[in-house]
Image (cartoon, rainbow, N blue to C red; front, side, top):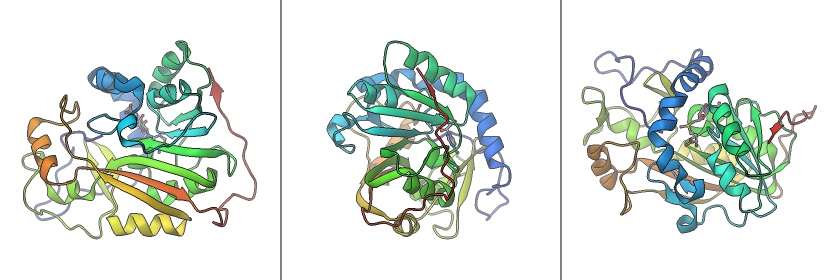
Length: 287
Ligand SMILES: C[S@@+](CC[C@H](N)C(=O)[O-])C[C@H]1O[C@@H](n2cnc3c(N)ncnc32)[C@H](O)[C@@H]1O
């Protein structure tokens, strides 16, 4: 989710620093370090709608209807944090697995899924190299999780690989507009285009590397891996409580320009499997 204050200043006229070297280690360290503060700040919002709500404004899944039926479905939550989505889906009869690269985040997930909800498995690992066999999930979801912070060129093929033919991917992440309009001096999105839409790739916010793609690049990447676009919701602030992630000024911006994208995709039934030759067994810990 958006975090304020990009840590390094770009040289005047240059786009924000794209420091991809070591981003995995750096991102993980930051999530380990900020896990408690993140949870404290957003817990109340994340707990609304039994954890089954999307994005910056926690819009309930019951209103958006992106996931379809989940009872009995094998679900993978990518970058699960405290696994509130997985808990919420398990309560509806799904069989979720939450994966995250940060131990501190998984420790919170373990505490929560230990508290009475059956059938949530947890695994530590990266979306860029999933520790699961090919074709084992009916549904993959990420709510500003790993698909925001992992390299899409690595993570999307992995998602396509672990989905069954006909399986679905639903994820929330940033709109590329945020990056184009980001005003470094004011530390928030502005009303002018400040940097190129094309040729980006990564942006560093608060030390965290986020990956950016243009709309066309996302679609081309999905198609290359046999994922057909079923829908794209560009959210705007709904009536109700303000986002715990945004300042009031950012909310006003998001009424006029897209801050967030909710993508829905389906793995084409006839898509060639991108399975690895040596399937790996799932290393999960179950609660
Ligand atoms: C903004 S949090 C969102 C978590 C959850 N949806 C929530 O709102 O609490 C992003 C999560 O993605 C995890 N993450 C980041 N990069 C990842 C990667 N490459 N693979 C797996 N998890 C990752 C982080 O550790 C963090 O827990």
